[in-house]
Image (tube, rainbow, N blue to C red; front, side):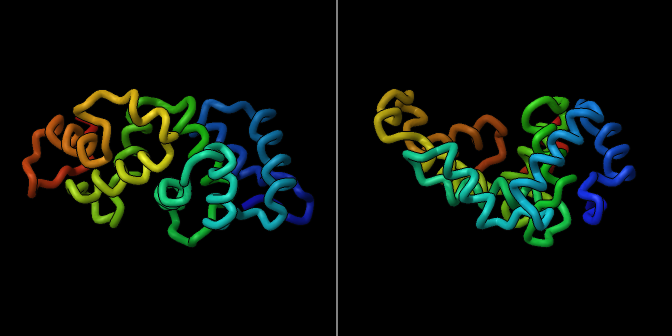
Length: 174
């Protein structure tokens, strides 16, 4: 990850992030300093990520969704997010290109990481998203998507895959 002795982000990671994100060198260095203050080990565990995520949704159950988001960002599957994974995730979800956002969304829904999305995986993600919605806002949702199951069914029908079909990544971005 960075040069932990000096506390500065390594030149290699800095150059890579400048090439692969819209962040400037100054922004990346500032993000790194903040990251190191918040995560002195240089890594965020799934539990720490869930705690952070829950602060954004204090009235909701964010744990399940946070686990899925964490899984989609942990690209090397080591059970932690390092600075590079963190910044690329931040970039993808905020300022990244549409194609990259779709790739991330696919990885979020591909729960078992087998390269396909099934209707059951769509339902699982929709269920975790619905846990984020405050109870008083559920009543405001349209009748055809006011439950996780209805929302999942609507999404699945949109992609026209049938109940036992699968969706490959190229199906979502072409």
